[in-house]
Structures are given as C-alpha cells and as structure tokens.
Amino acid sequence: MAEGGSGSPDLDPLSTYNSILKGIDCVNFTKNCSRASISLTRRLCRQAPGERLGANRGIRDVVTHRWFQGFDWNGLANRSMKPAILPNLKGPADTTYFDKFELEMEDVLCDFSGWDNEF
Image 1 (cartoon, rainbow, N blue to C red):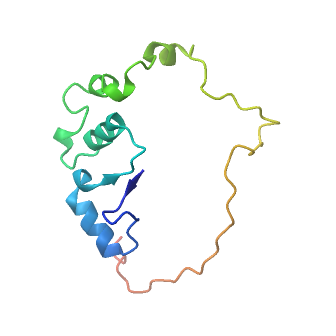
Image 2 (cartoon, rainbow, N blue to C red; image 1 turned 90 degrees about the vertical axis):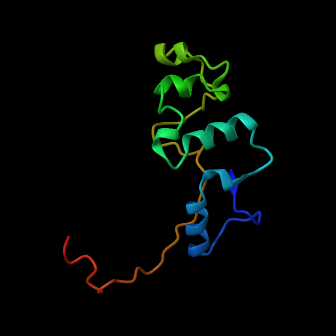
C-alpha cells in the first residue's frame, strides 16, 4: 500500500492532484511491500503508455516479471491450481469472509450550475 510523502494519505484535493502529476516514481511504499511488488507496480503505472510494462512484448513482459517468479501460469490456464484459501461457505449468500462496514449516508448537493447542458 502506498502512502503520501508525509507518511499519511493526502486529504487535500490539491495535494492529491499534485501527487498524481508527479507520477508513480514519487510514491512512497510501506516497508512491508517487497522490492519486486514495488517494481511491478511502478512499471505498470508509468505515465507514458509506451513505457509501461507490457508495452513491448505484451503480456509476456508481465508474466515474466520477477514478482511472478514461481507462479504456475499453466495451472491457472488449465484450472488445475489449488486455491490458496478454500472458504467454508454456508450458502451462496454467505458473507462471512467480507469485512463489515456501517452504511454511511450523506446528503448529495444538486449542481445547477449548467456545466453539463451540452451533454
């Protein structure tokens, strides 16, 4: 998970906008991110499409990245891989493995400025 430069997420929209303009190389990743996962993320998120991982050899660039080293791509394609986690579900509507969140309700302000009249 990435963090803002100060160690906490930016809450100011202008600060967020400026961080986006700086690009992926300015993102500080948490210490629990491996070097391979950071490399994969940065190479997939390049601003210029021609510089992104996969721009040269397509999916081969991605699947041969070191983060996927040891991954059984053939097993995935053949549907023969064992799942990392096999949940014990009580039925099709069982949400036991999902986080619980409180429903947040907020009033939505109507925008009558007319900015979208030409759509």
